[in-house]
Structure formats: structure tokens, C-alpha cells
Length: 157
Ligand SMILES: CC(C)(COP(=O)(O)OP(=O)(O)OC[C@H]1O[C@@H](n2cnc3c(N)ncnc32)[C@H](O)[C@@H]1OP(=O)(O)O)[C@@H](O)C(=O)NCCC(=O)NCCS
Image (cartoon, rainbow, N blue to C red; front, top):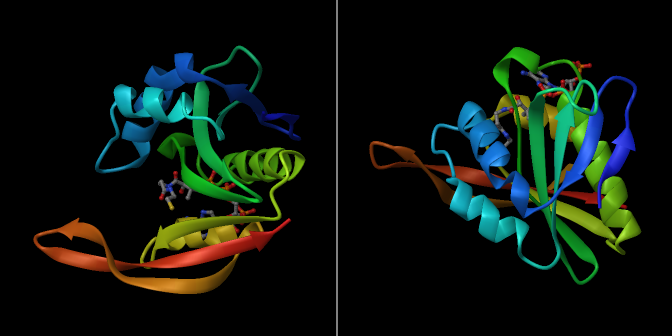
């Protein structure tokens, strides 16, 4: 569902065969990695679509995104960029391609949840035109029995 050539980053639409690639990229971006089986299940679920970013069509992937359509809404499930390639517009390209694919699939809005303290992600979502529409207290487990609020963001399409 995704296929867009941004100025620098090539965004490819991917299916379940890319579960190991997504799992490896996710492990580079998050402290609690999801395994390839989880990605395989997600990528096989109707309405779920994923994108992989690379500098050229056959180059190593440096970022990924995963979205889920539900009626006329779309949810950003997860997105990550390898640390060495951050602040180079990879997330911007992944979000742009994902939002375009969601709109093409009939979505009127995209929602996501982000940890309140995740300043990089919140800045990237702000850059992509998302605004806060809600807050879920104690939504994320952060270790040591601590919990953190999620901010719910929305972007109309
Ligand atoms: C959040 C994340 C995906 C952003 O990816 P990225 O490719 O570095 O983001 P981009 O380069 O496309 O940034 C786009 C804009 O977002 C903002 N932004 C991104 N990272 C930022 C940071 N660390 N500090 C301040 N602003 C930031 C900037 O406005 C940036 O534009 P600019 O570089 O021209 O100023 C990346 O930091 C990441 O993978 N983090 C770990 C995983 C994660 O938290 N995922 C989101 C879970 S909800």
C-alpha cells in the first residue's frame, strides 16, 4: 500500500515476508523489542500495512512503519528509525507515505499513542501535523513498577 519516492528516502510497501527485517529494525529502536512472529501476525492481519525506508531501492533498510486501517480511521501502530540515521527525514518520509496510503485506503484521520516523555517522537509527529486529542494516564510500563502517560494524537486527512 505504500510506495513513494521522497526527496532522499525510498519507502517500500512490505508484507509478512519482511517480519524479520521489521523485528530487527524495531530492536534497534525500542528497549522492549517485538519478535518476528509478532510482526508476521501483524503484517498478515487484514488492514495492516507496513513501510520500510532505505536510501535506494536495494539498500539496507534504516526505518520502518506499521499502520492499521479500521473503517475510515487509521492507527499508527509503530515507527522507528535506526539511531545512525535519525534527524535525516526518515520518519518524515515514512509518515508522509503512510498518511498518503491511509488516505487512499479511505481513512479520514490517523491516530497514534506516544509516551509523554518521548520528545523526539512527539516532535516528529508535530512536524507531520498531528495534534493532541487525549491522554491515557499510566498507560506505559517504564520499568521498576513505574508507569507513564500516553498522549493520543490525531491528524485529519
Ligand atoms: C521518533 C523517530 C522515529 C524520529 O525519526 P527521525 O527519522 O529521526 O525523524 P525525522 O528526521 O524525520 O524528523 C522530522 C522532524 O521531527 C522533529 N524531530 C525528530 N527527532 C527530533 C529530536 N530528537 N529532537 C527534536 N526534534 C526532533 C524535527 O522537527 C525534525 O525535523 P528537522 O530534523 O528538519 O528539524 C526516531 O527518533 C526513533 O526511531 N525513535 C525511537 C523509536 C520511537 O520512539 N518511535 C516512536 C514511538 S511512538
